[in-house]
Image (cartoon, rainbow, N blue to C red; front, side):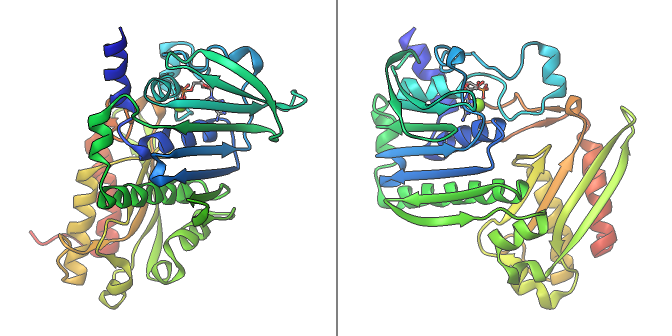
Length: 341
Ligand code: ADP
Ligand code: MG
């Protein structure tokens, strides 16, 4: 049992960034408008995520970190109309089995917050009153304490720095898709990244990508019918302008592309490739080494997407992928012209 538990946990939680991802998704599901992330020693000393969300009800505390407990869905039909990031009840339990976890929480109905210590099975082992306001703080200590090989993998300075960069990229993505979310990232007591609350996606992009980049971008909005189900696909976001003189600011040597499907940051290689193809013909630049910066938000009916394909939910299965790709191509054609035959 212990081995299987460890194996499945290490698939959900592969790195510091996956802990941060799961914890901030929980915060967002709890309607937080502010999230503060604190890391020590690149997250291997400590990862702490504090939110001002709904908090966890006293009755839910004993089960919150039990594998497969989730307060978010109760039937398989709910998966068809999923509006939360979480739905599998796996993250908190997985984190418990590979680290030491403290959860401090207070709902609006509680008089004060309580800090709970959890054991590797997700059971509460002790509790004490605390002084925090409404919301939840999850503290993760000694990550991968029982996975020495995994821990070893991150033992070099370079790996650690890469990991920190990935955390920043992740926060950038959530910062863009959630304009009214305030975020801070602290590493070893210094604030290294932050975003304030703003009113729309444009302001959010300006604050996280910079005003120079945003001045070389154009907004787009495209809506079409999903032929297979007679429902709509909505595309919106910002792409680089079609003038090649702006290409210097809107091209980046590192990946600065942000694709979302139903508000989830996702990896969509085919979409990425399409955008690079279309954009490179305008700029005459080699988009295999310099990447266009863009933000693309795709909204499809919840029933048209399966987010249950990989443990970390970064890969999603679009049931009608061809239609979505076609919609993306239509946007690209209208902006950059057709690809040469
Ligand atoms: P899931 O997100 O799939 O439900 P998790 O293991 O991530 O599973 O979390 C388990 C449960 O703990 C959630 O369903 C939720 O009820 C509660 N929870 C976890 N984090 C928070 C948080 N930051 N605020 C409020 N509730 C939380
Ligand atoms: Mg979750």
